[in-house]
Image 1 (cartoon, helix red, strand yellow):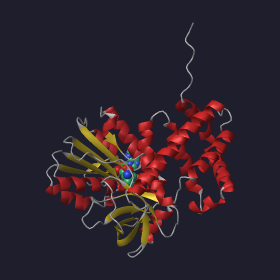
Image 2 (image 1 turned 90 degrees about the vertical axis):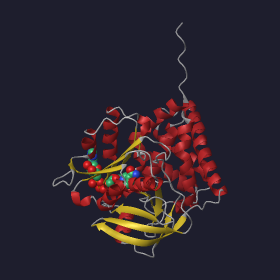
Image 3 (image 1 turned 60 degrees about the horizontal axis):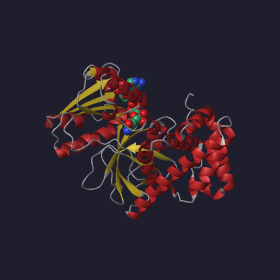
Image 4 (image 1 turned 180 degrees about the vertical axis):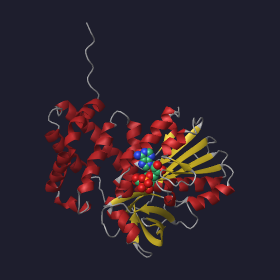
Length: 383
Ligand SMILES: NC(=O)C1=CN([C@@H]2O[C@H](COP(=O)(O)OP(=O)(O)OC[C@H]3O[C@@H](n4cnc5c(N)ncnc54)[C@H](O)[C@@H]3O)[C@@H](O)[C@H]2O)C=CC1
């Protein structure tokens, strides 16, 4: 007798629901919020006035988390920082069951083809794991005395191109980040609208932070930061997030690929390495569409002239080029292969995707390539 087919795992059941709900995600998330706010009107004030982007993000994060139901360590890595970061929203433990009920109502309505009692039970276990990790991480952060958010005063604002500003902030408490991480940020002009910005400097003795912000069209927060923020303004920061950090004790080579304002976290990483005097070679490819957009070229060139272990290669996509010409992944490919090398990627999502594919094709092991999650990109990093 052929063996009885084994029951699908929780992860498989959940992925089936996700496949069904993804094409109608807009309606599903609309229903989720309708249920949430109808049953709990008091929760509406925790969300931005304009919900367009928020709607998309919440469902995307929930689906991404539940998709990892079969991989508890990955779930923990993804959610613990989010749980800690959610303290800035005023999220309480009691909110999780309310959101869970609204999520299940939306899935039951928009995933009718796969929403069986077994599937619902699998989602129940996954959601309990998600909520459990986030609640625990928030409690642990609270126990360490970490504030739920930081107030940070703008103490410097400098335009370095018509649409890019370098902004210096002074947080009211020490801000405990690692080079390569990003800050979540809310401006006074768009309450409860949070965006991610990579921190563009290694930790400084005076505790100040640097951000590099490009005003993108339709980007409420980025446009306010570039064209409206002035010294004296106060913004809020959530806990630092992101796992794009290099092992400070490794002696392996590092390849850094930065596209446009993606130079920000790589500048922080390189500055930190300068402070540590590494016994490793660092190659930094710094790309932009046009030569005059390489706004960090001068200070980085000066740094490279002082550090024999650092080589800097500017790459410009359109002529006239200063240095190498072409798109970053195409140019860097010519320098491969990259044995025993850790790779850090930062820039537009399409650059990250293509660079990843190029590096994997060159035999760089997947676990050596780090970048911020693509889901955290786009609007979240530039809007
Ligand atoms: N942690 C991170 O990964 C960070 C990411 N960013 C993101 O970086 C981007 C920066 O935007 P801009 O300054 O306007 O950069 P950009 O669009 O001018 O591109 C800069 C570089 O990326 C390469 N590139 C662009 N599109 C490409 C494609 N389709 N294929 C291959 N290479 C491509 C270009 O050759 C150029 O070297 C934003 O999307 C922002 O969200 C910004 C800061 C941090």
